[in-house]
Length: 358
Ligand code: SAH
Image (cartoon, rainbow, N blue to C red):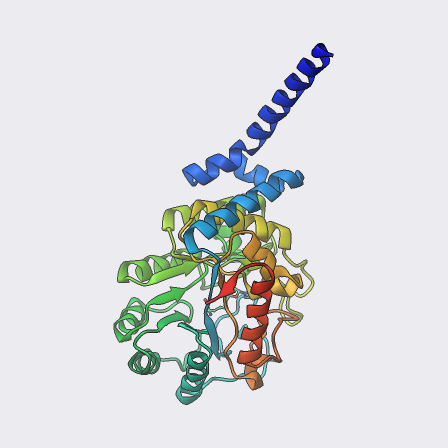
């Protein structure tokens, strides 16, 4: 009897040591905020669901340490779907002649802000294609007016690659933050996703300028874009380790029927969730959204993103009449919901998983 008990104890101890060792990689990622490539690869590819559950659990714990149970809402205003670029993945690329183009006027943008203000949003995000009519002066004027009317709001721009002078003038006019995903940190892969004339080098130049000027800068990549390898994802993690962005937006690639990538497979929800969790442990203070593309590929995608360590949601404040025209990819969600409805829906979804939207 005593022998058996002793034996059980030994087995139990060995089991515990095994579990501790198994989770050691996650503990080290949390403590040291980095891992070697082989370990990152293991987390991205592992079939061990207990290990991955622990990864997400620890990421969630770190997010709660940083932000409590608050999920920050950013009001997204899609200001234009005109774009001079021809990114191969994007539904509003210049070459897509099926898109009905629109551009919000200054007055329409201000109306969206008014509505957002009434709904309690503290940040407005102005995102659009690279619209040649968005001159330095026009954007400067819109930003100044938003800043004048809502001195306490954060103004985020996401208008693509521009000159240093544009970024400087918009910052001086009152913009605080800028989102420009790097899309992929492998320059060759970048060239497969973008037309001639666009380069990873220029994207990095823009990102470094934005940081130097003093913008809170956001970057990130699509997960599962055509041609992407696990090594590319690791390069993305390394790139962001260097850049130290304040915001990190990642979402699965979703194909759009009127692009050259129409027949390509969508990115993986699970890989996106693992990357969110890894990024949370590498960048505890970063604002990381659970993106609309994640919600598009999985009904509860945005909730899953929060449960993997994300802390931001970006409900749409754009006029419903223009929503469908800003289709970066197929089946984008929340196309018909009024701003108030989509905010209420997200509030309810967050409540159901024990968080609140601020
Ligand atoms: N013109 C701006 C805004 C681009 S749209 C800019 O260049 O920054 C915002 C993001 O949507 C892009 O950075 C890209 O990562 C993402 N996106 C575009 N097409 C997509 C697709 N087919 N699937 C998933 N995400 C996509």
